[in-house]
Image (tube, rainbow, N blue to C red; front, side, top):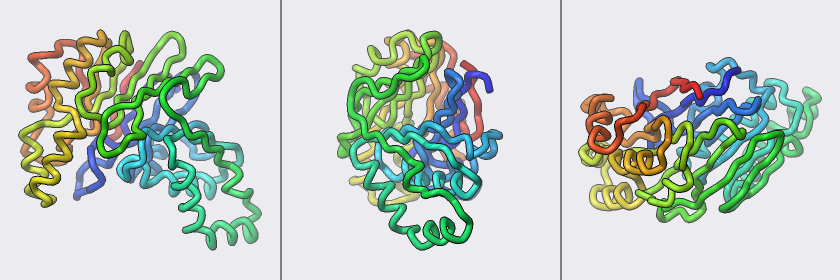
Length: 283
């Protein structure tokens, strides 16, 4: 598979609606590795639709533990196991990732024990190697390096942007974050910057649909980045291509791709991709 980033889930937040996109997950093909990044609802089906065999699961990175990034982590690994996974999967995530995995194992204990005894499967828990990471170098193997930067996503403190590089190509993911100027240095010269984005006029639409009024409005503005500010980060970093992802809103018919492009026009004149589920971007 050529070097690509495939968006499996493009919406911000955990809610899903008829015909709408899935929460956050991505597949990065780089340095000969197939790297799953975040595991929101729908990641398993999304991976299968790319043609990837779940038995090939190798590397998983979780940026933070909000449900729209981790809800389907356990089900993905379990489904891969029932598909025939027999080699280790290395799971990198922030502090608390091990607890999430152990909680899933406990919830499916009956099924897992039954399948091991009745179907002769290997022990699922022993197949998943968990590495909890913090800011700084995270991974280096066979030319692939991964570096993490703690970003600003209150109230979550363990949330990390990730920089993937094979020495020739570099992909940077912002994770969920408020406008965070240090990301420009972190993403400097990247071939691809995948940055979360929010339309201010879309916030009120979300509040009207989901409720929780002032409290939700306060959270969104304190914890996420306006589309224009994502463009400012990309311009300062000098990246080749900007991908807007984790879109807020992503499933409101009142807003189209043109709204996102219009928001970016004053600050970013480079290649711009508006994420949608199933979209692949060549590196």
